[in-house]
Length: 404
Image (tube, rainbow, N blue to C red; front, top):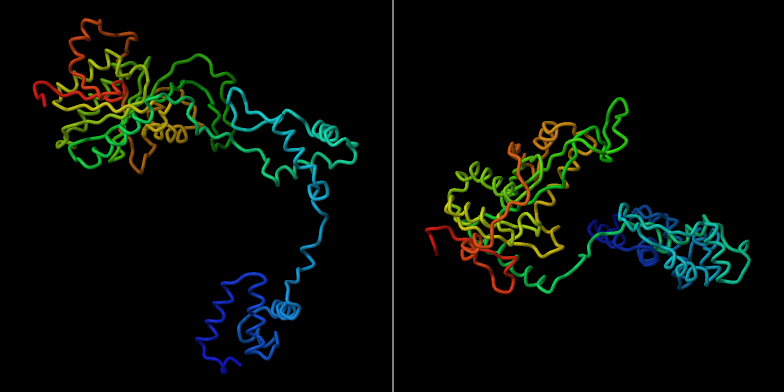
């Protein structure tokens, strides 16, 4: 039979049928079967490879002029919300009143105070019927899940607060990043510190694959701690981490910046400007006198222009290095970090964009509360070129004696 039609025509008909689904496909198969297979489903199966039962059904539907639904689609009991039109709207209203998130945000689940039995009783009260006439709690849960009321996480995507300068600060950040992307003499980096890591036999909620069950202290109290401070080179994705014992201060970040540059300045010999992305932490604020003094000192010592680009308050999640800390936490989660050496070893074995970080340990202990007097800072404040309108979030420091 195939010899009556060119092979190209048969293939074209097969492709056309394959692109259709359901009722339109069966109608097409019925028309072709009548035209080229004498209206016989078995011959259509031989010629085009179609299921003859589907062709038979298509011929019958073409004769009737409408789609014939299969018996299987009408099987089963109707859904409870179909039997009772008031059930679903009433249930939604009840859940809107009873649902809440964890007030401490220790979990991302949505909790419902009302229990299955209480939910059934409340429905009965709202609908003014006997509870025994309503579906079981299990059936109610399935009904709600079908209609989008399943448990779902609470996404932390809305900022807590937006200040009047937020849009202007973001415009400045975008413009600065565009300049850095188009100028090879500008090196863009991101600086931040991870949350303090407790050292000891603590689980931190992780899992590990061991022959025997790992045991940890039942309370994460006491013991020593360390804080990873980091610098991320945005373009090369090279990460630099220093573990600091004691508090992270303005001097901590300034010394780390010096250590990083001493290691990397030969690689970045053509760099004239370092653009630093920062959040609004108190140790690195542009109004922190000690931090500003150290940045001026660094600019003069290395003969580099320093641009401090701050993200708006409550938007620190956009600082690129924040993603590195989550990668580090996933990497060592489940390991009991009993010593600094253990933490350093795990940090060295992680990768960020296929690169191993440069990891070190700061041996110096830093004192908190170091600051300049108003008179001393007044002498330095003229060195800080602040952008009008967003003075706190955009600062440029030009080295002496190379004033531009």
